[in-house]
Image (cartoon, rainbow, N blue to C red; front, side, top):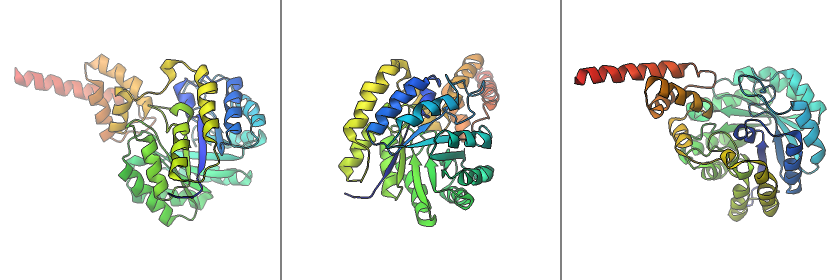
Amino acid sequence: MTDREVRMVDMTLRDGMHAVDHSFTPEQMAEVAGALDEANMDVVEVSHGDGMGGSSINYGFSAASTEEYLDAVAPELSNSKLSVLLLPGIGTVEELEVAAERGADMCRLATHVTEADVSQEHFEYVTDLGLEANGLLMLSHMAPPETVLEQAKLMEEYGADAVYVMDSAGAMLPSDVRERVSLLVDELDIDVGFHAHNNLGLGIGNTLAALDEGAVTVDGCLRGLGAGSGNAQIEVLTGVLEKAGYDINTDFFGVMDAAEDVLVPMISDDEMPKLDNDSLLLGYAGVYSSFLRHTRRAGEKYGVDPREILIELGQMEVVGGQEDLITDVASNLANEQNTAAESDD
């Protein structure tokens, strides 16, 4: 048992946007945010699923603009801080100004686990605006612990108040989480956080492993809404942390009510996250969920099992933006199959 204080960040209105094709309306966001605030959630994050600036043909258009979402949510929050997400290269520093003007308290800047150096200007800008700045190292399973630490130290140098290990593909085992989080806790002078996805069914377990190693801030979504098979389910996480003796502000019954009475009526059964074969394989292969749909199409076109394509992509350690490699992998696998069949003949 422990009485260590833990900060909880709810991302239903950001990562959860992936599950609903970014279709939450400002009114729906305001309703969810109000329920989370009533439950004393520490932080509520709002933006397109791919962060500010993500509403586009490449990432999917959201139902409203960042400004409309922030204007709807900010008045609903009196107990909770308001966070936004920005990925350098997708969002711009101008959007950080918009967020600050419309009531954001903090900004989380996310980069690929080996590309923290692209975030320096953004961290400096967030700090100048007077916002709390958190750094997120996406797809942290793709780099050894020493590299994760090296990149986290860059973010600390740039002005980050906290750095997150992000299991963006839900690919980590508890041992992977422990190795990375413990090293960052030992070597950084700032807080360490953890962000889980549930593609291997380990969202809650991995979050507990991170907390055991000294992480002090963790993410989740109502009903686990999120990319792939979703994030750590935050009402479950709240109950688990209470049972484990952690000091949390979030009200267990309140966050349960926010999930059951507010979120669930807004979404369809198809949008509800589930651990199916597709998401399981994404976690097993360590590939981000954006590759799934394209992989299915390529598998059908070339007569190749999509599972084989995803595993090959995982071995190649592909990252977002490399979806064009799917066709090459599928074509190569098809050629290999044809060659093997001819040899058998």
